[in-house]
Length: 113
Image (cartoon, rainbow, N blue to C red; front, side, top):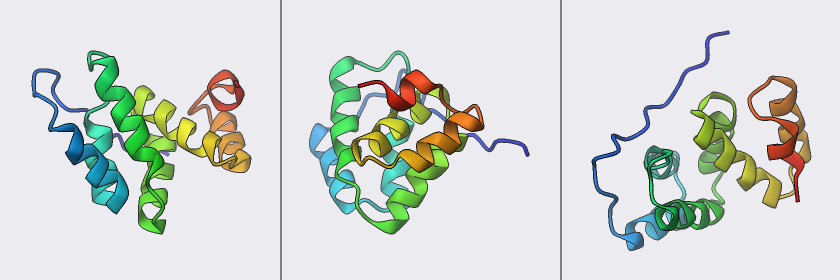
């Protein structure tokens, strides 16, 4: 099965205000998760990545969690890593085991403390 990838935002586009990240995390729709994930890239500042990480931790809606699962399996590497961190913090080991078995993330990312 071909993996559908989400586009990572162009690195020269400035990140929105930090308050926008938090608002998106609190609302937690699938669209909000996609919005947050698009700003994750290897050239993004550490501060922005930490704010996105925090904002993702606020997602509690079924739609948002379903979108995070999608990123865990089909996102870019950095997106899969942040999705794995989300599920690790929620102690959802089964989904992480499946992601490891399918080669989406490695055991270190899934289970390190």
